[in-house]
Each structure stands twice: as structure tokens, then as C-alpha cells.
Amino acid sequence: MSPREVTLRFEVPEVYRLVVQADGDGVIREARVVGEFVSRQIGTLVKTHYADPHKAIYVVERLCGACSHAHTLAFASAVEKALGIEVPLRALAIRTLGAELERIQSHAFSLSEIATAAGCHELERSLWGVWQGVTAILVEVSESRVHYGLNGIGGLTRDVPPAALRKARPMLATLQASIQALRGEFDRTLGERLAGLGVWSSQGEELPGTGPNQRASGSRRDVRKDRPYLLYAELPFDVPAREEGDSLARVSVRLEELLQSCTMAEEILKSIPAGAIQAENVDAAPGATLTAAMSVEAPRGEDRHTVALSREGEIRAFTIRVPTEDSIVGVAAALVGVPEADARLVVSSFDLCMSCFGGT
Amino acid sequence: MNVRVVNLGSCNGCELELLDLLHLEPGLRLCDRDDEAEVVLVTGVLTEANRARAERVKLRPGVPVLRIGSCGISQGLFLPPDGALDRVPDLGRSAACVVVGCPPASSEIAAALRSLCGGGAE
Image 1 (cartoon, each protein chain N blue to C red):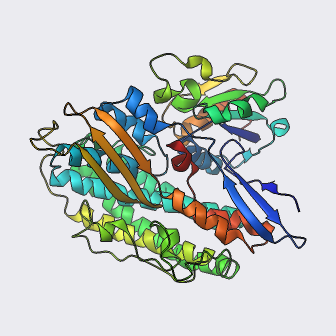
Image 2 (image 1 turned 60 degrees about the horizontal axis):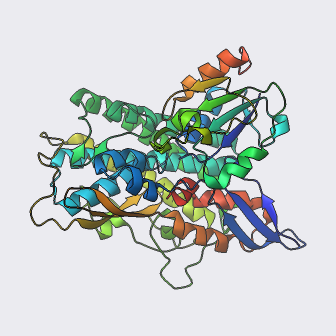
Image 3 (image 1 turned 90 degrees about the vertical axis):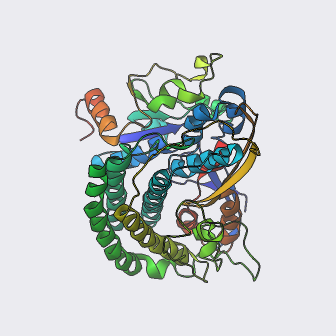
């Protein structure tokens, strides 16, 4: 059979396409995700027009609407490392809070897309309720719904008032309860359908990269545990993992991570240290390396930013490696043997981000 | 009402708000066909790879176009200081309305749709 394109709902034709080749029984034999259409060449744009890191961070934030906090965190941390800037503890705590709230927001969106792909609209509405719930908390913390604008070079762009932090705690407790209830609902509604579907097998080898997709296929890697940053060395949390590598395992890992993130956010909210939110000096320290790389565990996995700066602090080189670069390999492998009618469901279980992937 | 989203190269920030919009306004349906669109929402900067695709978008006459967010309106931060405003495609007609923000909130997009379509979004 000749290759044909499968329409993926939100991924309107301008963003990405899935090209599949299926046999006479409608079973996929070969699949390919095509998606360089939204490449905005941000790496180049930063070097040519936003060489000042304090300006570049605004365009770096727009790499992705779903994980912009992770991008600004990796970028700011790389610049801070290169210049030898010490970020105050309060800023580190609030950055961690933002990162875990972002993970909840991103996973809620991703899981609701799976429910949509499966035609389970009630479940999808419940999951979107989680998105709306965490978005309301983010509005308290950052005054923004999407693109929080919290990270700046050397710390935070603004402080979070104590009243907002106090208000966030009961909101988080309500959210946690609704996620608990959803776990069972997901299992009852979709468990059977997702089990064994779209297996990304590690075949005994270590899968490339980190992230929920890899951790659903037996990997235990998570940048927050392996190379701790922010408050992750002190924060108690588990890294949920499964061995099956199917769509159900990917859903289960994300559902468990939602709860882990709630617990972490709760812990941080209990004891955010007082003090400054911004380093006093954001110029290059004596002996600064001027070149550095920083990896963070974004909602989809390892997001790595590498910067090289001049002594005056101007960006000379800048590269970004996003987690979808690894997952896109997995989705092509997992689709082989899947009925064509389930292609969209399997793709949604991988939570690819074509904005990040194509955006660099 | 059938809504066609033309994403020319968005970060997905506007798309998240559009997903929220679909929950606020259950009467809206996403469609990916130009000839079924009753209203068109344009998001994102026009990337090189999407230029030809943008030119292929053929809307029925009289279909209103809303430009959503800084990128959809003027390329936002992606407009380098050397003047590339002409890169924003007009899709054959001028925008009937713009919704400012990065991204604008779903409620703001809903309000714009209501004022443009005279309550048809309900």
C-alpha cells in the first residue's frame, strides 16, 4: 500500500503530519512523523538579535507554550553557571515550585489529549479540569496562565507575595484529590484499550534520553535524581517507572508523576525561605568559565541548553536539545504493528512537542 | 460553529488557550478543512517551511479571520528589528479582529469571537 497521512487533531496540517504505511488488514508496517514546519530558528535568532541573555530569555521562553519554564530555567541556569552567578535560595525554591506546577499543567494537557484521541469525552473534561485547576494556582504564583515569566538571569523577575503562596496551598490540596480520583477513572475507562498497545521496547538496551516515555519502558533515568539541581537533592520524591512500554504504561507514569509533583509543590509551599530573589551581581565573576551547559527534567524529559558567552556577557553560541528528539524515534518504532485506527491514540500517548522539536 | 486554526509556527501557547476555549464554548468545533470553516483563527509566526502552506489556505468569501496573540498579529518577538512585517500573510483578506496577548486568555478569545460573530459562538 502507498503511504498516506493520518490527521492528528490539534496538530493541524501546518504543524506536523504522521505518514503511515499499512498492510491490507490496516496494520501499520512503517510510520514516520514529519514536523519541521514550525522551526523558528530560535538558536540563530538569539545569536543575531538577542545576544544579551537578559533579552534572550524572553524569546527562549517562547520555544514552547507547554514547558517554557523548563526552557528559561535551563537557559538561565546555563548562563548563571557560565558567569559564576549564585542564585539565592528563595529564587531556587520558587523556580522548583514553578517547574512542578508546569509538569502538572503539561501532563494534564497530555492526558486529556489521550482521552480525546480515545473518544472518552467525559474523562477528557475531568482532565482538563486538572489543567484549569493548576492554571488557577499558577495565576496566583506567577500572575500568568501560560509563559509564567518567572525566571530571570540571576533569579526571579518578581517575588511571589506570601498571601499568594498561602492561597495556593488549599487549591493544591483540592487538585491532588481530583487527580487521585482520576487514576481509577482512567483505568476503568481506558485501561484495557491501552494495555499492550504501541509498545516501545528497550530490547534490553538503555533507551536514549529521559522522560515519562522512557520511564514507561523500563528506564529509571530522571535528571532531577541523576544530576540534581534546584532543590531536588533535598526534596523527597519517587521516580515512577514501568516495564511494559505500552500506551497504558506511559499514561500510568504520567498519572503517578502528577501526584509526585503535587506532593513536591506542597512541600515547597510549606517552607519557602525568606530573602532575596535575585543575585546582587549578574556580571561575569572573576575566573568565570563563560561556557556552560545545563540539563533540566522538563515535563517531557531532558532539556539541555548550552551557552558560550563573551567576557562582556554577550551570547556567542547557543544550542538546545529537547526531549522530543528521543521520543520521536520511539513513536515510529511503537507504531509498527498497531492498527491504523489507533495511530492517533498511540501518538498522543507519546506527548510529542513539535513546537520544541521544530522550534530550535 | 466550525473553527479552523491556522498555526503558522506557534509555540503552542495560543493553542493551549484555544483548547481551553473549546471547553468554555462547547458550541465551537475544530475543523481542518478550509471550505467548512466558519471562522479562522491564525496563530504563530510565519515560518519559512509554512509559507507555501499558508498560501494554499483557501477560505470561502466572508469568513472572518482573527489573529491570535503577538505572533499571529505581528510576529511578536520573532520580528527582527530589520523589518519583516510583510511576512505576515493576509490569507487573502485582512484580519477582522486581533486578540492581543502572549498568549491571550481563552476568555479574551471567547469575547472577541462573540463580538465578531454576534453571539454565534454560543
